[in-house]
Length: 174
Image (tube, rainbow, N blue to C red; front, side, top):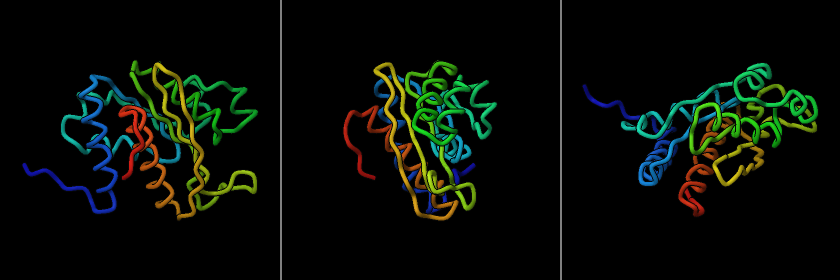
C-alpha cells in the first residue's frame, strides 16, 4: 500500500511534525496533546508521520468545560474567573494532559476559531497555546485574523512550533 501524501495546505505542518519527531526520538521523550479549537488537528498532523507512536502517547479534544475539568483537571474556579479561552486555562490543560497521559511534554490549544463566539474582550481568532514539561509551563497568546479554517491551521502551526522550540531549545522558523 502506498503512503498518502498530505494535502498542500498541511505540508508546512507535517514538516514541523517531522522535526518534532526527530527531536523527541533523539531525546527519548514523549508528547501528549490537549486541544479545543483545533479539534485534534495537532494530533492529526503529528500522526501523519510513520513512527509517531514511538513518542506521541495521545491526547484529548476537550471542547466542553466539563471535559476540561474531568479529563484535564482544569479547575472550575479557573474557568469561572478567566474562561475557557485564557492563558490560565491553557496552562492547566497542558499540565493536566502531561500528568494524565504520563508524557514528558504536553501542548494545549484553546481559542475562538470563529466565525461566531467572539466578544470585544475575546475576539474571534484569540488563541492561547501552552507547552508543559518538567521545567514548567509556558503560554503564549495569539490573535489570528483568518476564517475558521485558517485560524485553526495557524493555531496548529503555532502549537507545533512551540513544541519544537521547547524540545529543541531554540527558536524555530517554519
